[in-house]
Picture 1 (spheres, rainbow, N blue to C red):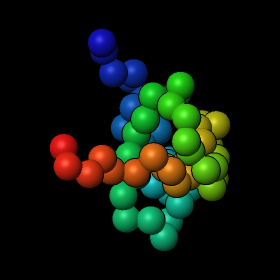
Picture 2 (picture 1 turned 45 degrees about the horizontal axis):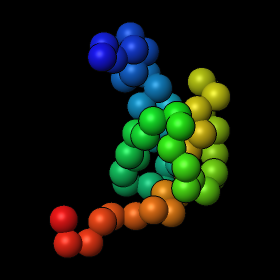
Picture 3 (picture 1 turned 180 degrees about the horizontal axis):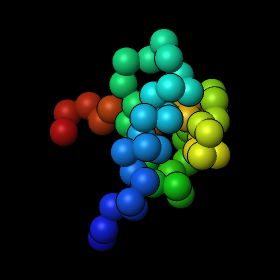
Picture 4 (picture 1 turned 120 degrees about the horizontal axis):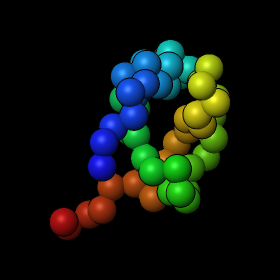
Length: 57
């Protein structure tokens, strides 16, 4: 799978959309369990992940 040419721009836009956050995790567009917080200039949703880390892995 090849990364999209605008990946870095979109990642930077995700960080800019939530300036108080220190980390943005990129997920597949089909992922469920996202509580939407903001939208980037590219139309990508950012928010909080409700499935969290997996304990004991």
